Length: 221
Image (cartoon, rainbow, N blue to C red; front, side):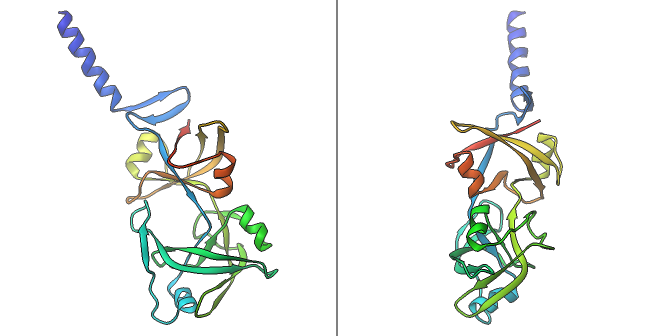
């Protein structure tokens, strides 16, 4: 009888370890080590037209390394961003592939350098965003709208979202560990069929939490 009870207890424990466990207000899929964090430095996304204006007719992006999110990569091309005041940020990275729109994602510190006040937005939401000029080896692109500070966000699949009990567009709270532990609010959940579970935040947020990847975080319930 005791052997039977022990066997059943082990089986129940094994199943629990594979299910979503909720403890101390934290939501964590069983067996997971948390959500990996990527610190996203300033970068641009280019439309086909902008790419050719900056790098020449027929230009293509040169992949140097893949990013975690499926299909995205760091390109070898670089641009200079110039604010209305004439102040500039040189050697701004380009993230591929080509997109339907052109935008530059900045931190608050970057924006101060350029003398602009970009809003905090989800990628691609550019209406009313800040103006900026991009300069490449073949020409310039003047954007009346196009500079944003990206919302801190978590990429996940539909299965991940089910495990965490969230849905696309939700705003959640995320706890960062460490000596400078803090909780960030208004973290956007971005759900898609092809996604790698990962949180993205800019360099200002990363510095505030003293983030040094690799590090993982937890969503608070």
